[in-house]
Image (cartoon, rainbow, N blue to C red; front, side):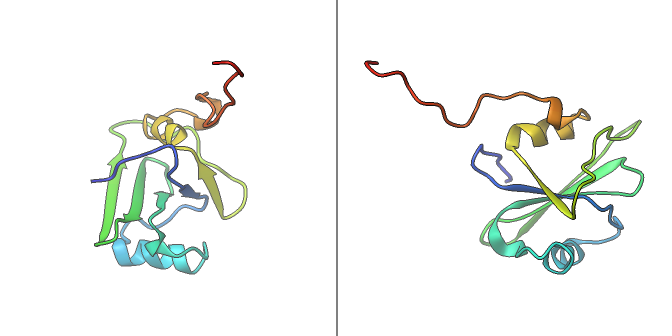
Length: 118
């Protein structure tokens, strides 16, 4: 099971991919163009050319998981454009998967100091 946590590293591939690619094809994309080890346990998010579907690849220590979401209508309005890969936070990925712009989503900061005397 894929479980998102605030500490999980999530990388989004900027370039679209051919969705005929299976686990081995996605892992190859992680290794060669993105230069990241697909066995590291991070989540890798990919989009098709028309931006109507996303695939997520991760390794859990025993094997690979692939999650595929295709929208029933419309397309994902947001997809990053800078560089080969961009990082998202867990709450931003959830917003992206709901079909919204994750950069406009606000979440509580991951850490904040407590006032003294509490």
